[in-house]
Length: 125
Image 1 (cartoon, helix red, strand yellow):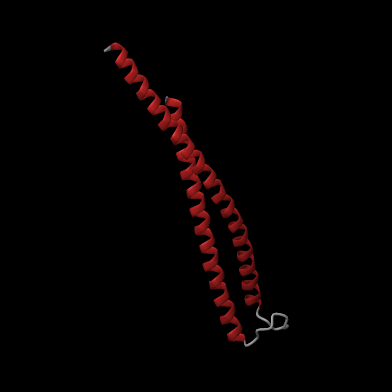
Image 2 (cartoon, helix red, strand yellow):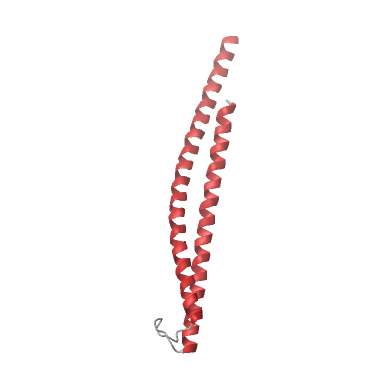
């Protein structure tokens, strides 16, 4: 049955696409972590240079304030990406289950066809 083969190929494509999405989200999360850590180091260096660590102090560095805000934004975005990754992983599991079902159906259909061919050959011979 050609339609079963097409179904398996479609499900395999979907599984590969979901895996790619999960990998891409993991990469983005790691990059956001790296960028946030870099901003932390920049804030520490600026505070050390100015000698002011109190963010409410009137002379606190505007660069440090901006870097802190950017780090906070990155952290918030990372948290959202983690939620998206969790959803993508659930979709991946579902797609893998559907692929497995389609492969089993194709395998079963293949065995049925083999049985039909053998029985037809027995009738002829």
